[in-house]
Length: 202
Image (cartoon, rainbow, N blue to C red; front, side):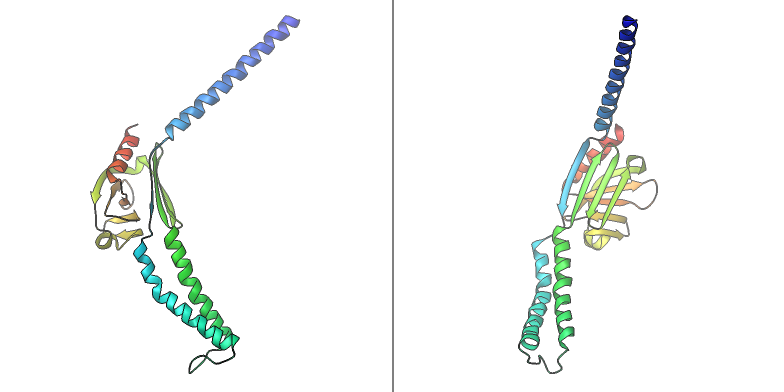
């Protein structure tokens, strides 16, 4: 009786160990299939963009002086002074709108990841897009004109389809089985194209 119980227990242990081994193999297989072949992060920010915010900063400082003179000191500001609440509101908006825009531009970045499941594009905080390998008909690294072809950088749509770009004039052109072509801007365009081709052949 005891021997029969031990035999049954050993049999159950073998089944449990086999299930664990299968789970580990499946995990490793999924890990291998999703391993990253290419990753790049590009920031949209350039130092010269700060010059665009100089007029807004000047206006905000001028309005601040108006608040100090009219609201704090009690002397009307200008020939046709605004009411105190309106002056304060306009000053706050003049600070906030350029400030938020500046913060977004400074932190905006394009992340491109290629693995065996496809291409993941994330233009933070605007858009995230996944392109599966089965959608891609052709891949080609090329130089392009961001202004003439797409009207600038960021998430753009032009005469040649969609563009996800952050800087530079090089990228990878994707022709898809459905929808518009996609241009992915990259400082390592040849590496990106090779990684996509490698993912498609595996």
